[in-house]
Length: 316
Length: 276
Image (cartoon, rainbow over all chains, first blue to last red; front, side):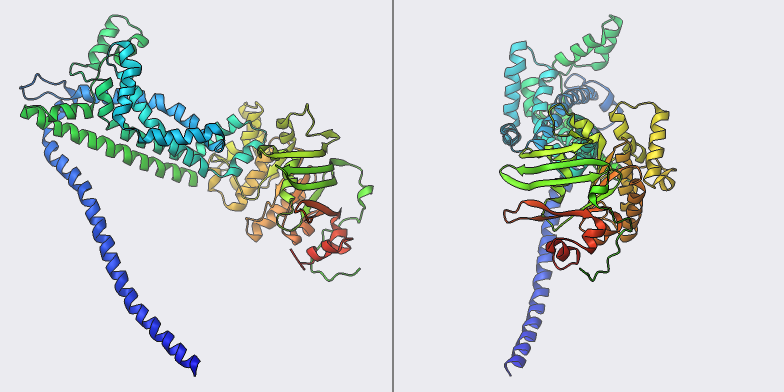
């Protein structure tokens, strides 16, 4: 008797659960869907608005000409594009090798004093406000040298990039199966050879992605550059190079001049133009914002395409 | 002692261990520690040249630890240390003046899961030779071809040597890993459950391959698969843990004797599937 009534109760319970479960499911699905849309609105709003406001400013001259004196229409932001590329390039060069090597160390020796210290300081460093990093580069390079320079900006951005590179590289190295490393060592390969020719290629997708993401982050930084590169509306890469060539300067000398001069960058230019009392400049600020947005988006897309290509290649 | 078994044992002359002349590897009073834990205790065994020796036993009995001490892969575990001796052709591989790189060249290894490098098939096989300074293209071409032929993979990959090694099937990847190990001309090949991640047909191919390789190489294989040990090996070592959870070798003899007339009751129980 009890068994029948129990199984009937069970059936009813199951039925009741089904009804309430479907209701809850529908509700939660709607709720999470709506919140997802809500979260996406700002993203598309920003992109749409920047395109709307800045799109009309973009033309060939904007990319290829230096700024005209304030008050005049026309002119471009070539100096800022060149500056951003130079400073980010310097930062990437300086951050890449130390970051990757440190990640190798941390991945291989996670429980040593140095390994734990490295992970801790990476966490701290990634949380340091970028303006403090800028101040540090100011004290380290600008003050002793007595002038602002692209090099100082590169150092500041490199410090900001290093934690991202270490972290992503370390995570990627951890994902490489240990028996891949053992297979190389079992053939008699030394540890450094194994790292370079087996582990690094296996982790390369992640490393490149990490570097690209770090670049995307650093390229948008303004605060550290205020202290280090200052800004320079008259910076003209073409003139430096052509005058260097006519004066028979060596490549080292030309590069020295480029890296040691104050320089502008896209975020810095955006910040300065947007605060100016000249409508043409404010309008150009929107154009700069659009270029910056496209660069960052392009870098992100490049990172993803790169991963996809590498994956296909590995699959054969 | 008559045992009721459906296991097919590799047919060879029912020799005794003492009759076999050539000893390739000899362990004496070998113990391996991880920190204070003694993972292996007093292993004494003689491994015969150009024969297949299987190491069997339940999980966690130290089979892999023993295998990895033959090419000093245990050195990679910081807390591990070894007591006793392992001799390769009479020379202690843990001796003071021994170059671990040379040991690992002479004693190759094939792992449980196929683990080709993320490189082309060609570069996988050429990896070892290049480590030892072989750079000439025609040299490398020859080594790659002969290694892949020995591992019975050549016909399947000769037209796509520059495709990624990862694009091959699991069984092909394992044969690629065998070719990679063969390319540095080892004398001994260690195999750690080389077929456990493979389907039955690929397993059979690996077993046939082992049979061929045993004509020129000494093979030591760890396996969980009784039938496999019985089918492929000439000698079988049975391991178990003692009351301190340390691995010991409880019986070592020709495969024929281990599977038909084992001396130890625990071996008999294990090979007949009564436990383990």
